[in-house]
Image (cartoon, rainbow, N blue to C red; front, side, top):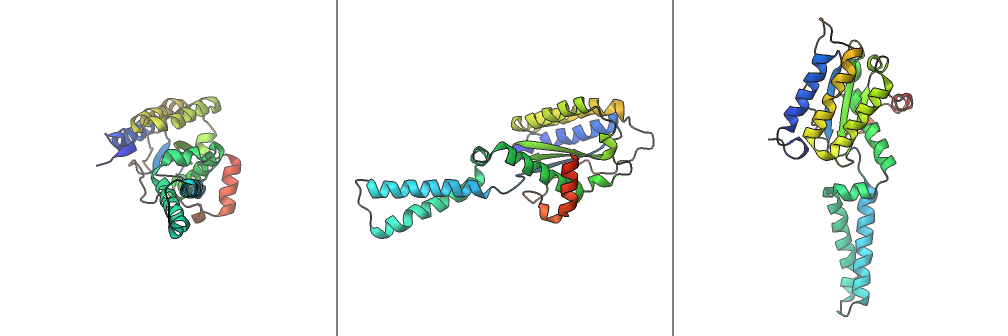
Amino acid sequence: MATGFLGGGADVALRQAIETIERASSAEVVIAVRRRAAHWLHAHLIVGVAVAFAGLGFMLWSDISFGLASIWLDPFVVGAGMGALVRVMPGVQRALTPRRYRRRAVRKAAMVAFHARGVRRTANRTGILVYIALTERMAAVIADDGVLRVVPVDRWRVALARIDRSIGSGGHATARAITGLAEVLGPCMPCRLDDANELPDEVDESEAEHDDPDGLDELELADDLEAGR
């Protein structure tokens, strides 16, 4: 049974959001949910070093007597342990990572998933990936050329901002925000009689924590990011 972001039937709601969009339009939608978009090693280091120095200061100036070996070793052992615990503290990782870096990492990971999951290979270039990064509490929506050529830019940006803001409110809120894409896409790219379901409707929960950009050609990724795709 799904838990966390996808718990309480949110996984079903997200699948229904995909189906609603695809009934209303010729778009092909994939939703990918990842624990994180990137590893934030600096957050582990900052917390670990801060705790180690705090522990060292306490041992040096405390009224309690500590052995020399303890003074040398214990602060760093505790610091290493606390640094490792940051892995399960997404709020700490967000607080120690500037928003622009999180945004870039989510966008880059989304582009990798867009290619890796075959969203770019639909017959009429109507693929859309909604990439959800839980640690960063952000979403990125990557749309292929067939969508970007016809969608109203102002309405598209409003819809994407709504999806991004919804991540912190949980899976059901995100499903409602994604469903709103149907109203944007339906009028400009209506569903065709011969429309085939080219991509799976199940929410993509890869066992990998994030999508590794090393698997995608660097020049291809740079070109796509520059084009805003």
